[in-house]
Image (cartoon, rainbow, N blue to C red; front, side):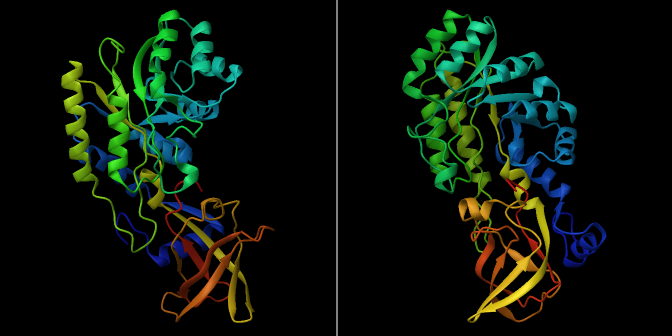
Length: 364
């Protein structure tokens, strides 16, 4: 067993000790994924805000806090948990998506920076808290992401303020003497085409000048870093892409006349590969030559397959040398869609075998 990968026997022992279903996380890999982003994107004023919606396990939050990460929070509960896990209010950004007035007032009382994504919320916030520092979330008008349900750009999405409404933003900000210290955009999750990420960045940077946004301290480009889920899937060369990011941002900063901070908000990229869901097979049946393996878990523990038809690699920890057979690996929830895999080739499964579902560290 190395620092970044757990072997079968180790996972089986944890299952025996703690019972199943069981989530296991590799902290060393989480720290590695976090730190390598600074190597990929060599900008001296880079900050990484972990998107804690991907996984808000307190042990993971505390680990990242110790390694000087910041946090992207999307709910009052996120903010409270981040504060409890040691993050200072200065290391938290709150992206307000369809919040209530009560939530706005509560989070404001905690002193974290608001990232506001609608003109109506900007008006309400300005009226309640004039003379405040704020960040604005724009819609970069780029549609990208690994599934249609996680594409957050484009005019059909609920997220962000359209770029062509930037003048309306500045009018409201001036009305209430709001200082816009940051601008934000997030194109989508698990974006396979780096050219799309760069397009979203350039669209946001194109509307920025010192006359329109004179007080900027940072530009936040959200997340979207892709994780390979299938064993045959190639890892994106983020070191190469990071060079393009720095060149693009450096050109912008020279035009703006000031070297700004650059933020990114990865969630899945930091934690997905570090997570294992360990489950036990309790039922085997054959339906006219179709093999079905029933387990003691379901979409209540791992929602991504039924929600996105997402692929998660599965290994038989107990019988890794068994002959290969095709199975539907099913959960225990009363929904026909509750399957972790369909017609999946895997080493022969027996009742009582322990399986590991890989890349289960994010949105699980």
